[in-house]
Image (cartoon, rainbow, N blue to C red; front, side):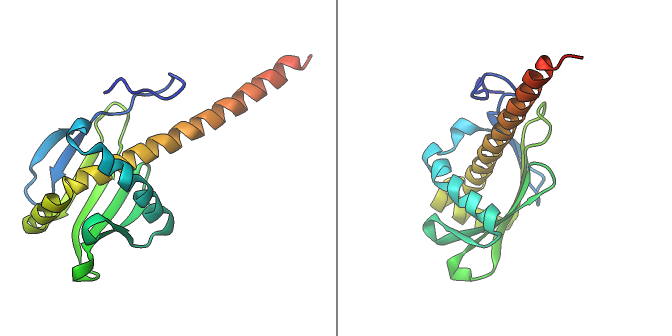
Length: 164
């Protein structure tokens, strides 16, 4: 785990590595966050958020589109296609944050040729999309935690004034 903690210094640390599994071959690697382009993740984060919010296809760089759906707790299913191929999904992926004591997991299903082309054009797009989602999830989780802490502090303050 990285040293990046929640803003208030409390809570769990965000993972700095990701288990990357190719579904067809079962090949698995551990990919550090530092190995992917931070600027591309920044560019993709609002696009992933829009895809999640709308459930519709969202255009991303180099003529590709994504469609995303949150499943279960902290799990995102993503379909990636190219505008030249219309509705055909070229790559599907599932990214799951999982329990805090385990690394997040990215499972990718595709024909190798499609992924090689996409990777060449967009520098590890699957990993960048995964990190964009994980960062969005962490941000939302952190905000919910801050709201809950504020509610609990108000409750504690109220009950400390009540005389039994």
